[in-house]
Length: 295
Image (tube, rainbow, N blue to C red; front, side, top):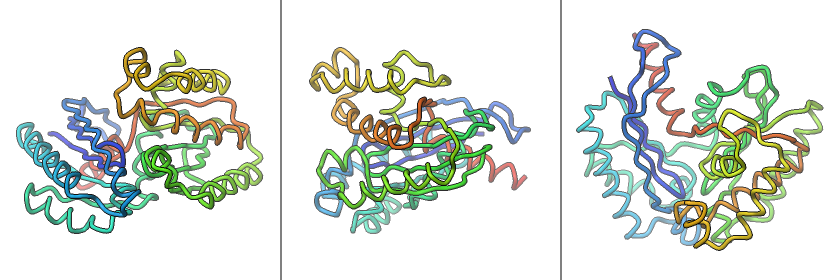
């Protein structure tokens, strides 16, 4: 039995195909048998023109055709394709989604920020200590999702149109920055708890890795800051060839780091963990939970 997740983000699109290691357990782990990431950058069009241009639409369609073939070859039983911030904002997303379904058979669902956060947290909660008080920070290309987790449950949540590609294109509104700052200050005031941070998104994982921290370990904010300063001092060329970053990540990693660093400062958070999970993992877990319950 195989499950697949398609994540259509503002910076990249991803296909993950997995199989459960145990089919008789709700809490089974999954074996990744295929993973493909394509840096399509839908946000480049959307955040400037409010729609996906012809070239990007063609590339997205070809990518979905390739994903459909891979799912067919691997004999995938269940899949879900989710699109996030860029497709939420694109005025022509409905037309593009209809064309892709007609061409490939893949049904794409544009999910709101709250559903995106819920799915990611399904994956995150498997990787973290349940008794901790945590601020979950998910930084994408078009948006940042924040959730306060206490004893393994979401207590507060909000989504903000602040993301790496959106920042690179100069399309983040000052009012949105102030809204996030206000939300964080109110959270800190209301909780009075000392809490740690969990960061998701490839850029945050990479910053922690470059700090010498494993995915299941917390990175001190001073080490996070030091690594971020090192990255910001380098050219894109050096980030690619010395740090071995993908070119699309080399362009935006400092924006993700700045978002996280500002959040850590506002909330006086001392440590951040970055488990290597994301929307794709949450989609897989959600598909499995639904399947298992239906049994």
